Image 1 (tube, each protein chain N blue to C red):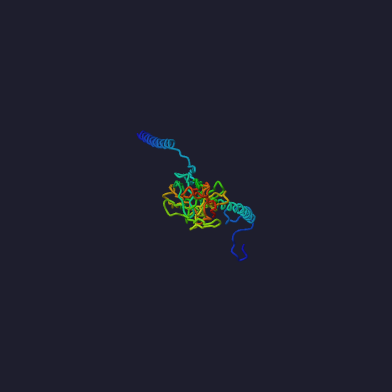
Image 2 (cartoon, rainbow over the protein chains, first blue to last red):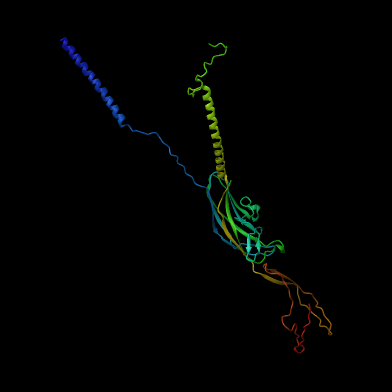
Length: 202
Length: 156
């Protein structure tokens, strides 16, 4: 009897051991399966992405592409046949603080006659956007260009709110006939080009 | 055994310097020299690179701060004036002349007429001349046709 009991106890222990081993094996298998089915991720590599937009500023003539004058007598002025207008458009960086628009005659003289007579730029004046009449001068456009006669038409302050923007200007032109007889504009047929240019600063 | 009385650093000639973490195990002196030489060469390489970098930075800053100008748009301006010349009387007539009572005598008009000539000319002109004249051969005609006389000797 004792031998039987000993044998039975031993078998029971074996059964318990086997059961424990099976449990451990099941756990290991589950873990192994979990490892096999886990998502595999690489390390991260980086690609730099940049985007640039170059600054730009341009002018489009809206009206008054040709302005005609009757030559005034001494001591009087004549106004242009039309008032030219144009739109300045810009795309600027945040470093810009202003956009200035100028009108000027490049070099000297402003107008050339077919008989060789000339009209200097200083004989012209402009009324920008209905403002005060301003005489053309070299000083008026010295910030833009040298040895030319003209005037500053408008200044627009640039802020974060108008880095992309536009402005329409107009300029009524006048031609002065001179103070004295020696300044009189000779009879002739004259032509020249009034240039419009914008500049963003600084 | 330290017989100098100075504190023993523990470093012996021809032994690695334990304070030098990058020591390769060669002689301490020659390794230091080699590192100094290497450092000098690196310095010589870095200085020009720094200069180039500074120039590039300067150029970049210059581009960034350059004034931006639009292209130029043109408006044609013309002015015309045809030539003109005109006369305006400042002291007009009539001028009355008493007929000379005898041959060889001269009578003067009672007023001296005056006028202003104005002109706008092209540069091709060289002179302006002003004339006074009677339009027909008979300067004056009397009321009595039978007493028609030619007054040809009116002078100015």
